[in-house]
Image (cartoon, rainbow, N blue to C red):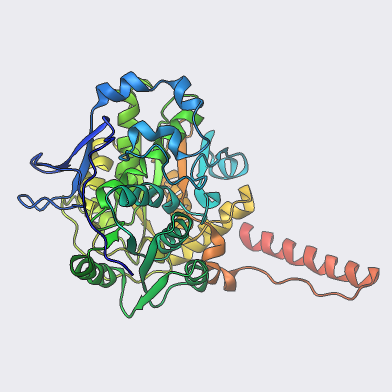
Amino acid sequence: MTQATQTQTTQGLAPTFTHLVSKEGGVKYPLKALHVCEETFSPLEVAYDYDAIRAQVSRETIEAGPNSIWRYKAFLPVNSENPIDVGTGMTPLVKSTRLARRLGLKNLYIKNDAVNMPTLSFKDRVVSVALTRARELGFTTVSCASTGNLANSTAAIAAHAGLDCCVFIPSDLEAGKVLGTLIYNPTVMAVKGNYDQVNRLCCEVGNTYGWGFVNINLRPYYSEGSKTLGFEVAEQLGWKLPDHVVAPLASGSLYTKIYKGFQEFVKTGLVEDKAVRFSGAQAEGCSPIASAFKEGRDFVTPVKPNTIAKSIAIGNPADGYYALDIARKTNGNIESVTDAEIVEGIKLLAETEGIFTETAGGTTVAVLKKLVEAGKIDPEETTVVYITGNGLKTQEAVQEYIGQPLTIEPKLDSFERALERSRTLDRLDWQQVLV
């Protein structure tokens, strides 16, 4: 693999994104592969010229754009007139009927990134932006530290773009996610450790080899891709903001960027301002942000992950503090659920809406249910729940908790006996529920 150069190309620099800035102290940096402020040690993020964006975009120009995240290109940190577009984004916003009825909600929507392209998770959004920017910065080898979905996306989109790729994952990942990375023929390093250990190793590799790590030295650009989940929901709701969102929390980046996306649409006059409550979902086996929220702390204490929800099992969340701040200032909540509740959340969404989500989505649905039962969601609110990945990637999580096919002979009487057994079992199940 060839080592990347980090030469900043200024020719054709888009006027809408202007510099990097530290989230604490407002220290400015050039638009290079940097992610931490040397003075405050806080994360860097991309700053924009919103007057320039306002002059370029309208609802009409966005609607006339491509049917992908690149309809929002003016809000994203890329120069290229030909960004890496593999059809990512514009996933369905499903108006829930049966799940809403089960929970007693009147205006529930499901943002379904379980069908996102090309690898069936929201990570396709952030990687499309990160690799477009990586190519602009001169990187020829790209990489990531991943709990699975990010490795899938990085490998797939790097293959499409013709970039060398080496990804790092914990060695105990679900088989579907490992296969879903290997098929694109990257170099895969399975590390004997949890995600936080993988991430630390990747920082060393990045510093030594000069590769473009999408969620390390390219993180300011990468994280901006999550804003498109906010943009799309606002557009799909008829250019209106929802009243309440429920989203999974891993590093906290997705959650904070949906919030930023809503704010940017308000700043540029695309939607009217309104209060949107932000609630977050974590698994009890890895819930450092939820614990801090419940205990009233403004800091997050790292934990060692122990949960089936491996895609959100980040024990030391980089944006945990900022997620806490958003939940509190929007009058939202951050809750956690057990692994058993996560499995029930996966089954509940599948049985009511026909959407098979992975463990992160099961966590989010379970937290949604928990918040409803606690009276923390108004049944009249327009509530959006974010489903970020596909259940085919984490089949192991539910394999022991679902039924088996009824094996029959190719005869009508065999079918009828099996059908009666099935109906009897269904009646027994309902009697157990009623008891």
